[in-house]
Length: 353
Ligand code: SF4
Image 1 (tube, rainbow, N blue to C red):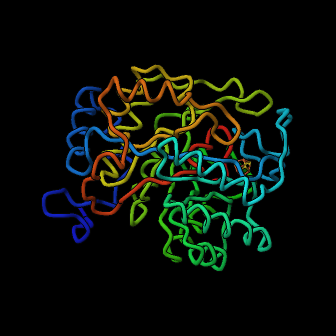
Image 2 (cartoon, rainbow, N blue to C red; image 1 turned 45 degrees about the vertical axis):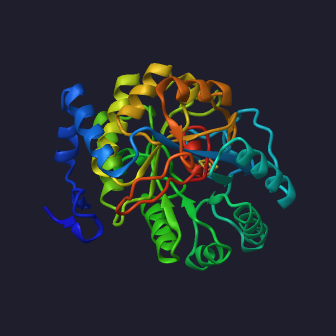
């Protein structure tokens, strides 16, 4: 097994970037309790077991996106009744960031519905990044595809994380999006890495894919080197008017399996419960935390779809004895030190990954 031993402390297993599809499918095939036991064991070697990180996500430019992501109400191609909004003013965004910080978020994620940003738009986004960072929050943006020079500009503004999701397996991808390729996405991720910005990259489940596609998505993510620091896993929120309205929904047990396999493949990364939590029972979320999820989107809206209310989240975390990051010193991790925010969430609902 080729392993990234150099980046893992001696007490932790080496991180791998050479997972085969058969190995990942074999993890999915484990008895549920065995899978969760393995995932929880690894989780404890890399992270504080009773801590989650909170991120808040704001849509800074809504709707009218030319892409055709079949899950997304922000695509201009689908009639979803979504209210479009142009790029927000910097001060509006900073006010939202202040509120997020007051509510306990440590990361503020900003999502814009673009195929890729225009250079003139980047100027305002850079000002947002600088302003949010000056408040002591970590910053993440999701703006679509990025060229190397654009990634460098964002890095220069102090951006911590860039979200860009792979969405699904390479095989299923063509059924979801036709306006950009898997390779385009990998190129953007490479540009972000080359600029020295951390990567937030995950996907969406419950889009009618097979379990082997879920394995394929996680295999792709786990074979990125280094692993994405943050891995948002979205459970599709079906929106009327999008092609995926009516897709076969994923059960809670299978969703928890996805979280557990992600934790095993990328033990040092933050795994985030993203879109879809509103419809999830407390018990499913509790199992997902046991399986290794250690980050959530916190706030009442994820770009354009609903998210559990703050009070419900607080009550659940108290019930589970889970503290929020900042209250607990994070465990040392080899490759990843934090989760990212944005696109993740969006994924099922909209985003720009
Ligand atoms: S997911 Fe992002 S890129 Fe795709 S249609 Fe929605 S806003 Fe556009």
